[in-house]
Structure formats: structure tokens, C-alpha cells
Length: 255
Image (tube, rainbow, N blue to C red; front, top):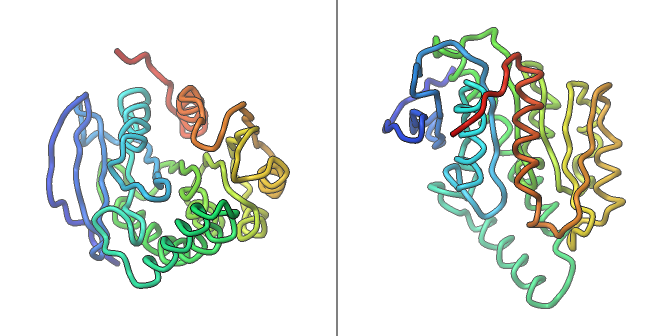
């Protein structure tokens, strides 16, 4: 089993932030500053394409989970992102994506293919990280664990949750079903799913097909008007409440 190695620690905005590595993969763990060693549920997150573990979307979601729910929250840099070097394969796929974008051609086939490749690498990394985090006394081996990942985070999260029985509930959204629908059929935990009605990349029918594929008895579809990058911020509040409900915490007001 791989161990968690803390490489830096700081505190701000009511959260303790611990940078760590597991088998050389960089991640960050946020915990309540009031008592970072207190036993609490864990939420694993995955970031979107082209960003990194400390992107404002990640730290903002962590704040909702940590300050608002008293959870621990952790995220890894995906392969080829953040502090992880790009491979020749990464460079070729990114170049193909930019070329399609410049030519006005559909980006979906490239994104689906590339994200599927990244997920094959990232899923075992997330499972090893969960093993390591559950060795910490403030998390432990038997506490509830949630997952939250949108866009590329969904491409990583669906195959991860499909094979990981320790996940209690999950938030996904905004991805094509092509490489994910069969894996989504293996997921039975409660799911909240976000979909943008006017997404210029993902046809509405494709997003609905992925939502329909989940085998969960409890699954909620949140459809908002707007384009791909216009997911309303209040959906993050909804996701935090959803995870709090299923992981056994009450959301508190934040200053």
C-alpha cells in the first residue's frame, strides 16, 4: 500500500490545506481549521480539463464542503495537468483539440478519447489515494466517502465510482455518454447530475443519455439554461447539500 506524504501545510479561510503526494502523484487535502484532526466524512473531487488541483473551482468547492459541512476534501492533479508533466500523447491530443477548435470542427470525439485515456491512468491513482487517506485517523477506514467531479472530473469519476464500493454518493455532469454509459450502469449510489441546456459541445440528448444510464434508485437531474462554461454557481451549493445529506452532515451558514 502506498503512503501519503505531506509536503506543505498552510491555513486560511477556515481551512487547513495540506499538499501531499501518493506514489508521486500530487494532491491536496483541505480540513476544518477549527479541528483538522476531527473525524469527519471525506469527499474526493476531480478537476476539469486544462486546470489543476488548486484551481479556484476546486478550492471554492472545498470551502463549501469544509467550512459549510465540516468535511475533509481532497483532489489530485490529473495526468498531464497541474504539476504533472505532459507526455507526448498528451501534447498530441491537446494539439488535435486546438486544431479542431480553430477549424470549427466538433471537439467531442477528441475530448471523449483523451479523457478516456486519462481516466484509465487516474482511476488506480484515486483508489490508491483513498487507501492512503483512510489511514489518517481523522478520516479512517469506515467513514462515508463522497465524490464530486464535473466535465473531465466526470470522465474520471464515473469509472472510479463504478469500481469503488467505498463511495456513498456522487455528483457528476457535463460529459458525453460514449465511453461512460456502460460504466454508469454499474453505479447504484445516489447521484446528482448537472446538464447545461444550451451546451455548444454536448448535445442535450447526449447528456440525458448519460444520466439515464445510471442504475441508481436515487438520481437527480439539474438542467440549467446556458452554455458549457455557464453552469450556475448555485449548483455548487446544491451539490454540497446533496453530499451532506448522504454523508450525514448538516450544512451550516458561511460568513
